[in-house]
Image (cartoon, rainbow, N blue to C red; front, side):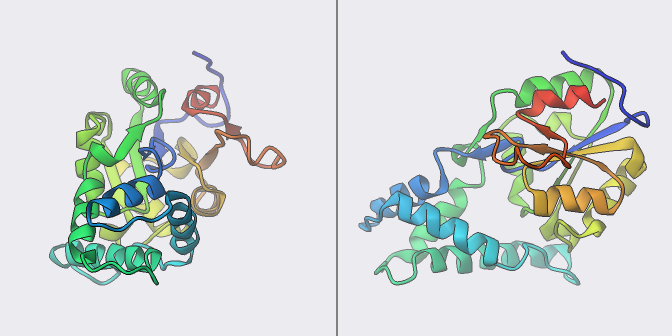
Length: 238
């Protein structure tokens, strides 16, 4: 394990969820295509994957400010229903509502997700070293059941997600909420994520140390950003 001393003493390590700790198993397009086929609709998974990615970034954040918790499950479901409906726009799909129910359940547990190979080992090491471990994610309330199903819940002292907290990354508010819960200052924390726009900019806006997970070396020209090729790289900064 690599370790070094970089700046103020780090007390907490916070993670993004999807794309950082775990990812969609086999890709969104393949899963949508597979489940649609059960209802008699055949669509190219590459087309579905590309369309999902395009629409996802254009969709308003998964956050519902000014709402109370008992309203949020319905709002989350409606948010995803609109997005998935757009993905299949122009495709005849008589049983779409049944399909969507199936998709929504599928992505509520480990059935739809896979941990990156190093995730559990890194969390175990951070836990054994007594770091506060938190999660800050633009996600819905299924995140808790997903983490439980993936057997990583026990490592986290706090899980903060946008649909419940009414703010989405890169808003500084969601980071502030997580740090307040942890009773840790921004300068004592690291935030690890895979998005420059959401994760890096958001963490920088309140003074957290950001690390970009760049598994494919996509951002190699960004010398202004500290990049790690996988989660093991965290240990160079704590």
